[in-house]
Image (cartoon, rainbow, N blue to C red):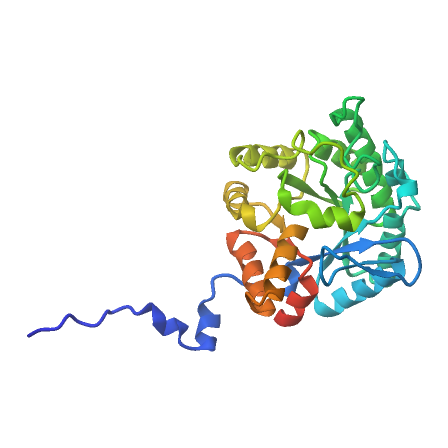
Length: 330
């Protein structure tokens, strides 16, 4: 009786040892792939935990500087800043966004003075500043007005660039705002400031904890489906990316993250440009809830999740797990 020969190729051979797995790994994840989102609040010596985001806090400016120093020590190259604007400074037109001494601008200057080697990414949108919670100027019927909003976003971007922001990240989803901001930065003497466009930002159910973090939950009248993308659409995302690149975006973002890895991969394959994803607040909160319930081990879940972003084609990931991941990878 003859026996079939053993297979000539056994894929398990290269998996047998850690050194061998490292040699043949197709995707690498390092601290340099991480952007750490941070929330800023008024005051001095303030650390205010965010109930909806276990382990995440709002920090006053000097606390944000400490986080920036930690980022530098961990090898995290960039911070993304988001302000918690007091109710008294919110208005229908979001005018506090244009104050050159507002919370975000003070934080930018403090970080660049203390830790200049860490990059600072700033959000350009009006929802942290509006009394109605929308990302732009609304008319009497509650409709967000595209062109008047874009004009305000241009001024907001210039204020942040003047404060020292390295990357301007418009998250509002107004048509044409990337080109308007790029032109204003060039004319305003900020040609080296990058634009990372939230090119494919979906009207997602995963943003709830973030709205708590910036103080806009409960303010929103209606929803954002009139300007953020329909979760059903993929081809439209490619059109949005193409427009933002043509208008001068240096990189693009897909938001949320894990539910939209197919969009990340399609954007990367089509355009071959730097693509980032935001592992948003709801994704983080779900992971933390699973960990708290004993459904998995934190370190392994965090690293496997972040590896998925890289495998799909991300140049980097915005994640609240950045410091933990950097410690594990360092």
